[in-house]
Length: 509
Image (cartoon, rainbow, N blue to C red; front, side, top):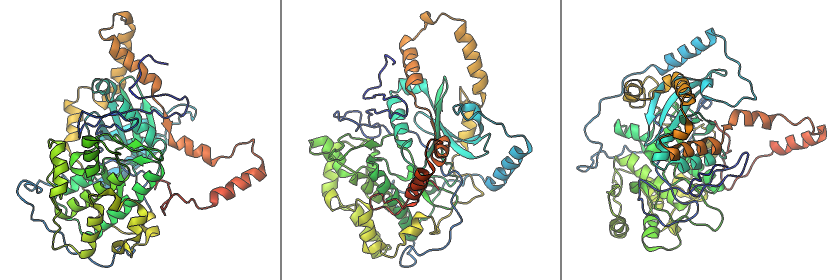
């Protein structure tokens, strides 16, 4: 066991979860200590998302009829700003077809199934996003030709910014969950420089990007996002997880336009009877009880905070600005007062049903707020929703991202190729050179013993994950199991799973 311990982190052997406290950067650096409740806003995902993609959608009734177009006259300083130039056209369909033809023309490599997945198993295609301490690129697995999004985080930067425990926390959560409206983890591995997460690839971009492109979201579109995110949040609740950072930046669209929740960097796990107390999240989307709990103590907060964030996001998608003028530099004291004195203004162009739904999501008192799937399903505003169709992605979204356009900032690729001091495509040569240099010097004369100690601790504590191998092992019955036992297990697995009130299975699309 390494001498370096990440604060609040404990290791439990093979398949263990790395528990760690974390601190909220987007909220405040000052927090009260509470087990498993701290966090830091983390890695942006760009256009990361869903691997193989859902089956073709068919039309299905979601609401009661067409909705009026949202108002677009933003107040000064709070609207979209000047029109931004459209992203360059990018022929995704031709590009993917070309990649498939290129891969099929050459012999696929065969990797030893007993070998852990590593960087050499993937072909790097292009950079598509970056966050505070990591980047995202599109990759193709060489042996299966499947495409994914790969997040990679530099170990030294994570150590310098005290982010290692946040990465471990996110991995701990992602390795245990899987849902049709989440961005699911497939592989995690490391090398000397970086930690890697390989997740579903979503090419539709995030909702923040589409807001910046002045997309006019209709009520019908926003209503579908609310339903899809309600299913995701209900699943997370069944797993005792509070996301704490639901916002347009963390909602990614697949190519059909369905929403997927990503970025669990400041998520926390709470058990029955527990409450979170940390000031964690992105201030404009944080629920009032988070600020109140931090400022005056009290009993803390729970799953209701994610539903408030969902309401803020839905309002912003419809109107183009948020219901409260909150910024990251606003003091907590002023925000507590703001929620008690300022009332939300709803557009007269919106339907009564949409206003009523938003009012229930944006209720300041969490006890009276819509905060679970059962509340949403029982509401008159969504009474016409066929939830089984929503879960199976049979409801056709009104907004479908342009498949001929690159839904991310194109400068990410230029930065990776030109400005990045350690570009990913040169990693293999760089690591070989570093290894040769390390072998030629006396390790006892290291300039930074602490850094080296931390790097060794990461190397030891990092958990390698392979969902593909996990699924195969679950599908193949053990040879030691009798035929009768196998039959009984198969029958049991065929029975429908009932997880809380969700109608949605936990399988990935």
